[in-house]
Length: 547
Image 1: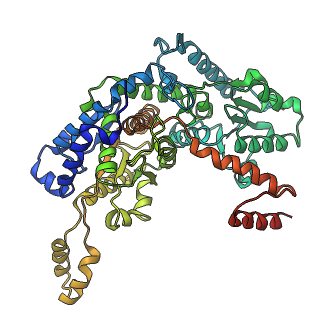
Image 2 (image 1 turned 30 degrees about the horizontal axis):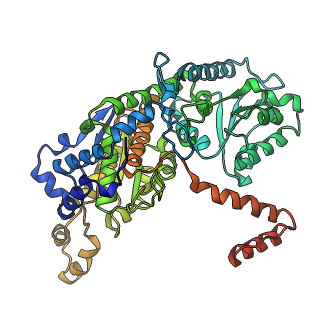
Image 3 (image 1 turned 30 degrees about the vertical axis):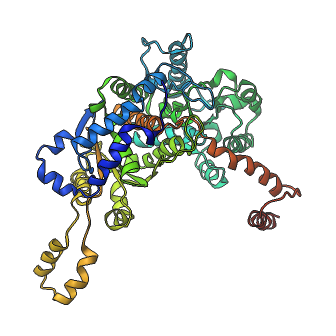
């Protein structure tokens, strides 16, 4: 398997030439000319439905994009990832997060070792621990049941379980509240500590190395808070760890029997399927957590076996490549029309931008093409009253992913029809736009003067031709959420494979961490170091304020 520079393969040049024609297409004309467009440019998998017909594409576009996929060896790279090769080449690690949701009967090899027995041994421990907390066998040091679970982590150790717990709120137990603390800003932890009691609280400290600066500062502060009314011998009843650093976990006061491991071949932003999902299992029960894993597994099977032309993650990735690299769209907006998915855009920010926000190829050569777009967004109807103005009439064209469920998990009359109406109307409006002639006709009906009409028409005209995808599920359940998350994981992989970057390292986050340690020492002592005048001035102001 060899890699060829993305912009040097034949399909790239064909797509560049094709885009010169496609740039002039109006989607309203494409729909008018193709009565079967919706059926031609939609697909289903693992309980999800993807409509990608509202993009500036044709059958030829899709043919060339599939050709691009093959010339970039995506199928071979996909198999290399699933087969446990050291796909993360800068850290010399395999990428096997999909094994975390594979069935117990499957065999997934890392070298000569089948990892599935170890994976399911950890899942069995998660299931047993969850059961003990739920049935009251695991109690706090005073014998009282656990009522509050506090997950302390950052990055993938926070964004994944936080997003899933919120998304599956309808399935949460009513006898346990789950809280998340990630920010090094003490206001984050302080707000949680004010809501809980030490004797009924369980802290999950999620850090593979047990040295993550933000996580360990929060964990030690929580430990000190707990010890104000308890003793160190009580710590094991109230603190558990998700880590591989046995020595550090034990020194903290956590019994190593209550340490849940995961592996180097699980990247942080791909880790919610592992023991990092302990807070999820405690929130919704292990049976529902298993359904979440099963939904992702169904998408894995589809991704690995479906033909490229009907492969949902591949199609979603290729439409993104088309918009990013050939139509020059620099960002993507995520618009879930489901309130419980309000953390999903933030989750995708890390998944996509930390994975593919790279400027060199896997071989270390500078790229001369765009990689990850900026990913941003909010829940749908809130976004309509915040930033959709820019999406409709701004100078940038921003593709949008609309995500919703056909049925609600509540019984309030009228709300879901209104939600779906807004979702579908926005994608239609972004595609159709509104011409000056249509605006003029509307204003004539209002008996507006010719002079006022001439002034108003430019302000009320919408260019349209704004691309979007719509992803539907029947109802937001654990299995549909699992499939949705796995869909975007595999989309991210496919795009990284085409751009020839490593989607599984994140060296860009390290430099700031190193400098932060140095500056923190200066803020907390009389030490001074050389900095640029701006940084030195800011440190001086902070030291004066902290005296």
